[in-house]
Structure formats: C-alpha cells, structure tokens
Length: 390
Image (tube, rainbow, N blue to C red; front, side):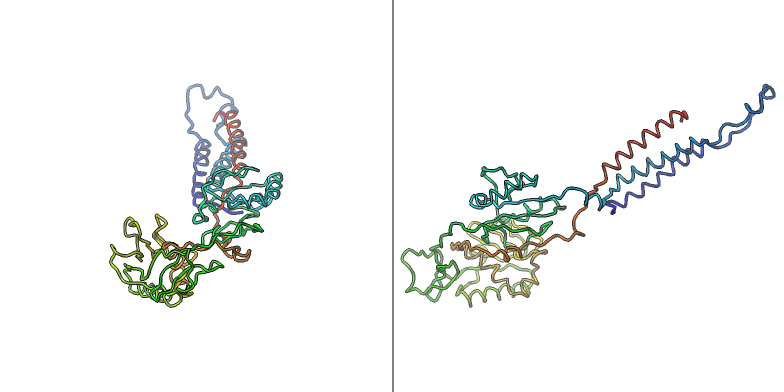
C-alpha cells in the first residue's frame, strides 16, 4: 500500500472541527431561576444537554467522513488491487504492410483475447484487421510513441521489420521490455550510387553490402555520381575550449578512417556548423550539430550530439562514439543515403530499457472504493443528524 500525495494528510487537522462542535453542544448550560421553577418536577428540571450515545455515533461518523475524504485526496495505491485486476497486454506494430501481413494471424488472435493492438505512430491508432491506414510515422519520434503506453503493462509485444531504421539510434525507455517479433523477409533496399570525392582522387561511397568504403578512381562505375567534393567547410562555434578540441579530434578521426577532409570557414560560408546552442534559423544548405543537451532540435538539419539520459557528452567522448554520431547524418546530408541494413533481434532488444518501478508515476487504484465509503458515511451522518435535529 502506497500513498500518492501524502502532503494532503494535513487535511486531517479538519477533524478537530466536528469535535469542537460536539463539545460545544454538550456543554452544561447556565441555570436561570424563574417564578414557576418550583412547580416543575425534579425530572423535568434536569438538564438535557449531556451528550447521548447517538451524539457520540454522529461524531464518529463525521470523523470517519472527513477521514475518507482526506484519503480520496491523498490517493491510495493498493498492490493487492493491482494483482487482482486482469493482465494488460499490448501489441505494437511498426507501420509496414509486409510486417502486418506476416503477423496478421497473431494480431487477430490477440484481439480475440481482448488484448490491445496499436500501430506505432502518432497517437497510437488502434489496429483494424485488413486495413492499412495512412499513418504519421517517424522513426525519430519512437520515444514519443512509446511514452503513450500505459505504465502498468504486464507484457509488451513489438512487431517490426527487423531493420535498423525502424527506431531512432539511441536508447528507448519502455514500461516493460518488449517481446520482439521480426519479419522473416522484406524487400531488399537499393544501394545508393552517389559518391563523395576525396582530396587524394579516390571516392567515398557504399559497397555492395551497403557499407561505407573508399572507392579507387579506376574502380568508379559509370553510373555513380559525385554529389560533393572535399574539403568540407566547417565552422565551430563553442564556448568551451574542451568541447572544441573534442570536435576537432572527431573530425581528424573521420579523415584518417574515411579520407574526409575539412576546412575552417566562417558561419556564412560553412556547410557544417558545431554550436553549443541553436544559432537562430538554420540556413538552407547548413548542417548544425548541437553539443548542449538543453537544446531541442527544431528541424532535421539540427542534430543533438548529447542526450542526458541515453548518451551524455562525457560518455560519448570516453567511448569514442563521437565520430560515428557525426558521420551518419553528415554523409546523408552530403547526398549519400546509407542502405537500410537489417539488425538482429539481440541488437534491437538492446535499444530498449525498462523504466524502473520507482520512476513510474503511480495512480490511485482505490479511489472508487473510497468514494463509495464517503457516500455511505454521508448518508448515515445525515440520518443521525436529522434524528437528533443537529
């Protein structure tokens, strides 16, 4: 048993009000002699102001009424009530006709059992068998969709194509670690034929497996198109010298491994900008990397390199993943769209982190019981008050 808002227990001080009223009504009155007093019998002349048993019962029910009203405000969460409720099972489908077609039988059976089935899209729309509605899905908003799930799930089933592009690259927080269902076969993505010209005369592009690799000039195919030639003009606008050195080290690593070269440029001439905060509206043709976790990107051309939950700045630098965080959006910005590669079930499972129970916001599950008790006590209190004319 847990209290949701224990601060409202101060409302119990209101119990002193009915106690004071009852004590005031039960005080002994002042005796006033008048001419016909001697003609009254001893029984009639006795004071009738003492508290009777019914008065004490009325006091008791008024105290109980106030007590349960306070409990309604405090909010009571009872573990036994949660265990007694029916288990809540949710099925979540990444919008993809091939995925829906492969798992349609499982989804129909889930609905027949009364389990909830949703599309993983804006607003978590309910799934209807045989229908493929137009859904607003963005892999970058995966966490926003997952935040709409109830926190008290018993199990979560997630249906995906098994491609890395189904989810955003960083960690995802869920109320329950999902049971993954990955499609067996999907149409293979086409490899991009765009390349980037390097300073040494070679090219950077995607190989037959969709991996980024250097391509010697004599092996360049006729259909491959050069979309950009090095060097890449870069502007670094950081307030801390340490952050500037870490960015420069990451760019040196990209040059050493992939042959990309960079040149210093002013803000107006730069193609790539590194800044602590947003520099106003991102101009057309500029890719802006933000190094501050407090800054929320406002467009696809603004990339946040730090996430206070999944990837703090110090951790990304220590693990050496900063060059990778820069490389993926950079080559896509320059015109090379990486092939959508499949991921293993283990790789996808590692993306999800279950929210600790202590971090979940509890909601009172005994409110209905408390309200029924309040109504019953109020009825008894009114009945006793009517009988005693109080």
